[in-house]
Length: 360
Ligand SMILES: Cc1cc2nc3c(=O)[nH]c(=O)nc-3n(C[C@H](O)[C@H](O)[C@H](O)COP(=O)(O)OP(=O)(O)OC[C@H]3O[C@@H](n4cnc5c(N)ncnc54)[C@H](O)[C@@H]3O)c2cc1C
Image (cartoon, rainbow, N blue to C red; front, side, top):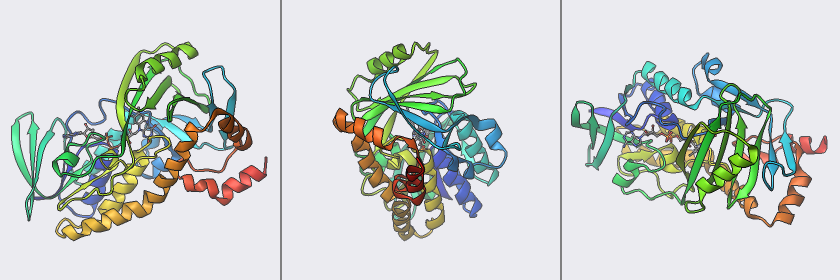
């Protein structure tokens, strides 16, 4: 019997597998596809990302350094309200490459990562979890002390363990124009109900266009309109779900959820790479597979690390739905140099932000 079966080799699952294996636990990871594919993510992250990948990976993964965002209340030609720093605030990265680097790091630490293995069932017994998995050689049942559901927004593990669903699932779509662009700013258009559309220059990776909205908000038609406004030629497009609003409980008797499966995302951007890996570290630090009571420590630890940021992030998102004159006044007042950290809405109230505003 192994200590942990991890379902899903995305950033959250691989990060947890690496940390748990480094702590001496016996870890098996099942990934239904090939690690990193299919792509359904912008890979636009804060610089904190580099603390989570092995040294040397940055050169291969980095596509573009971003210094700020231009906000718009209309389309491509509308007035831009820039928010920026003098140094890079974020990076566009090779997201498929990131997943592979993280899975390799988990393997190097001793985890057994098996791709093309789909978990189809999870049963919790008093002393063990039975995980049914379908691989190239047939179906098997694996026993573990604990199961970790890091299987994304539509988590099967969450359903099998009877854990609550996230508050909301947005529909995100993105597409790429191959023309290289290493500009310094991303563009954010507050033209979508309760969310936004974006344009990200990705260096040699071209330009990415995307948007997210509640299902039914006619996401594909809005995406086509965005691309047409910019006159872009899209040669690849993809889509995915973005969970918002973590449920009250992400642990069961012998199971825990991580990352998108636990809706550990930023409510104002949908970004979940850093929050998922932060929660993975909380889990690896607190959970002892031989002591199911330690799952309560994980619930406390990840909410201590991210709860305030997520609550404040939900308030920030409300600004996307304010009346246009209020948005215009707010953007005019606050645009300029900033001191905020893109993963930490609490930094809106930091000394650095105050200094940046006073120095204008
Ligand atoms: C359009 C869009 C743009 C985004 N842009 C950004 C961004 O710029 N920055 C950012 O930080 N976040 C972004 N996100 C969110 C980000 O992609 C997620 O938060 C992140 O991928 C969550 O990581 P994870 O490891 O929890 O889940 P995932 O990355 O979804 O990984 C889950 C893994 O589990 C596997 N799996 C699922 N079911 C099973 C099963 N039954 N058996 C075995 N394996 C299974 C999947 O194949 C997958 O590999 C975006 C999301 C979307 C949809």
